[in-house]
Figure (cartoon, helix red, strand yellow):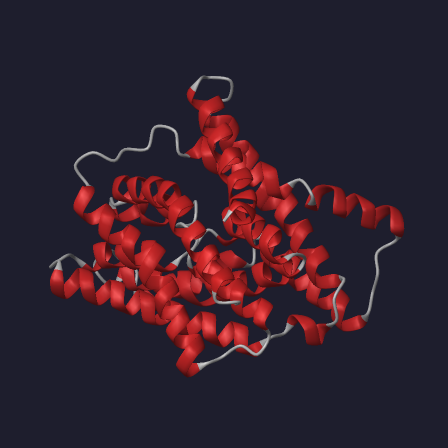
Length: 313
């Protein structure tokens, strides 16, 4: 168990440091947003480019990984929507809020560092494949579903707008360029390659620091029931559904990638969760769920890593 804690404790110490220094006023929430922008627009695209461009295309394009992750996520979001609508009697926009919280992991800011420390360099490939599924399938579907509950735009217009917005996402371009360099066997000049690597190395610690700082001031009171359901859906239901998919439907032959996708589904909710639900007035609930799942994931992730090690997975 100590070797597992040696992986997870540095991750959560970095999160706690970001939280503490922001709470104590050494950094402001505005500065955290600036740091987050740097990670999303500079450091993470550099990391994705490096992870993909330095590998052969056959090592990157793992259809089993993409298919299993997509299926498990679609099943989880469908369950989240059905639960909110049928059991909780919530609106469609609220059901989308539940589904986003249960389905969308923090693959970049939390998932990448944990997978990197647990499994090594394959973390970059896992992150790129995760982002393809999340940005081109899961998030557009959920945002389109939320719009069916009201608003002036039709769901397919929202879907098209969301997909167009992805073209402005630097991380998507990091993936595209990484694939292109891998496909054509291209290499950057050594000086430029070292520059890209320098920015890529900044993503790990800074992303965790930003997550901690962004948690400061998030509300929790009065939302216990909904928050707990979203947290259980994200930290327990999503990885269990992923495990079922891997066991009975789409097994991944590579054991390292199999572990990576299972860990991905056990991550807390993505940091932009409150932003995705803000339009429909659910950002308060989303922020509370983000805080709770990030804190609770220390326990659930350690238990999962211990279980995987115990079973030799």
